[in-house]
Length: 445
Image (cartoon, rainbow, N blue to C red):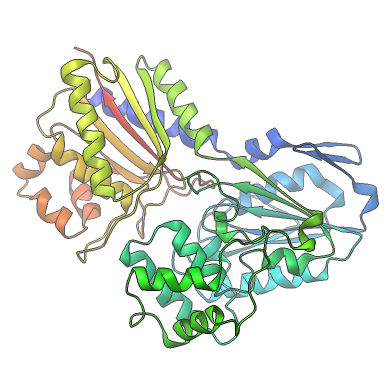
């Protein structure tokens, strides 16, 4: 095996370890414990004998795996459940109904799943316990539109927000105010039941209000914030008229706001994060060390334009190769978080594939360097790839095949570029989602 092939193989193994660390069942079992009739989570304790019914609800790419874990804990006490997941993101369950739906653009299956989940939550009474399982993708997978707004309106709005480069917080601010569930509104439906929400975070900094648009958390954002986002990205003429009018009416006080953090309905609500980017990145560092590399974690808060972030990582690779800073080879430089792509072309790809293509151009000719970026959910953009991998020879290999990497990057067509080189990172659905993991592996001399 060549030195470059070894770097690439090690990078894949390190990424696999990062994904494994965010396994939903392991995450839930770390934070939730059942001892007879006692259910304990994050310093809170409930006597299950005090509840007539226990319902499991939720949405997100990890929903089925999380539901399976809760079924094992609750066993005979579980009454019923409904979770909505992305197509293909399945796991064994018995009592909880799993509904597959569209992501990142919501579809009719998601509306039906959200409706069924809302109906179950609304059934809960004062002597019931509702356990809500939230993970990345929950915003798109639970699209129950506000009155006067159609699914088609929400689909078009999501597409426009993704295209313009809006970040996840901005996208979720809009989603909350176009929904009957998001921004604390699911908690309002479940009241007066006791509500425990377990969260796998896919948002930088783990803000509960942003993860899946905070369906069980008081919403600090307002219709006025929505209007500011519309103005920032000049979307007034690009949004569906019903959506624009809804936002304008809300900003003018003619639509009811989402429940705010001080609303009394949250007195019986507990929200707990059970896994995040931190677990994945720490596991990547441990795996890197096992493979003989000095790990350096840059940050789990990386965000911004994908191509710029890629250039920064490539520059660090060059510096490490030349001077041994900020880590002396053999080294593995690791970052987590989620970047954004401003779409300029009509190609196919995702932020991780675009990151690797942009980085490949900047590390061209560098020996003993490999770059990998992948989504921990196994899906990068509207593709079947989690991401891609490249090294210092990638650009020269591409040119030998008659490929111009600059043209593919300009067209946002990283998928087809890496497909031709057999350098796509294909994992299939992982049933978790804690954002992206990026690796720059620098070999020793």
